[in-house]
Image (cartoon, rainbow, N blue to C red):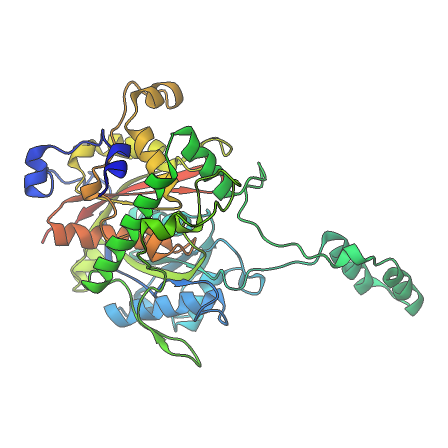
Length: 459
């Protein structure tokens, strides 16, 4: 790690005793609560995350979700009729399959008696799907829930202009040829201008990348620091991919094309090459570029959730418990991407833990600048006191525990599928690294955010 990135996170806590062992001493307590059912993750999978416009380009979102569901069925051999409910997240909705959860479930061969619904909460949509499942199980209404998320950025809805839509709908109701010709005569050239979807805030009209650039400037994060963090993400992802760590990835035979077996956006470069790219949003002096931003991605994920009793009764060995979680909301103008900063202390307080108790951190990487801004905010007493109404900072995660198998910058970010990837990666890392607690956190459009604690299932 270069001196610049080290400087950017100079205050992150990492004791010499911890560094010698690789992780903090374990807390002996469990986060189980009296009178609340234990909810476990039995398994989690995802199809390879691909850059948009590549192998998945001719598919639909429910095709990707169906592939993830079939991958989950194949890996777990769970009987389809055992599943009580299915919840899926999606952000860019395909109008033909607005309840994509139901269409994917039917396509994957689940019983038509199994209800399914779709949720949307920007980049934390599959987190919302999972916590919806947790609530159903904890309330005793279900024993087995499948949750996931799907996103296809290769084919987003492009609409006619409002004027053209209004004309076409009126034309559909016209009774006579004269009425139809009169309507057609009113059509002007500007009616044909399409409405393109934008990754922008409806309330502020600002793109997320522009907001990330402003956030990086507000926290004095340089272009070099952002490029260094992005290079770290790609380097660690490549190492994890080549080392066989990404065991949540299931192969997907794309109809009419090859079988896809791995993510295709991992591209370790050099700081020299990254430095040649021009700013993507704030021109000409911005610091956010394609190299230090997450890219448009197609993909889907799925996790199998059960009550602990049901999982054991069916003969499964769960991977982890899903414990406390929180959702937060802030100002979508100036704090759009600071969800992890606000959510982390809240979820730790709910569980009675400190940052030192957490062995594994999995944070969504929307932009390198967003990650580094959150780390600085979390490590700032001034920010905690002036913006969060807290007496002191929560502290920032040590990088040695943070996204060590890569993140959204390198693995890709299908908006609604990332949450499940974060949770199952945290579970796999806990087992691999001998940890007990993992913390998953993410920001989302609308100035919202999420954090959840994952506890390794006793080995």
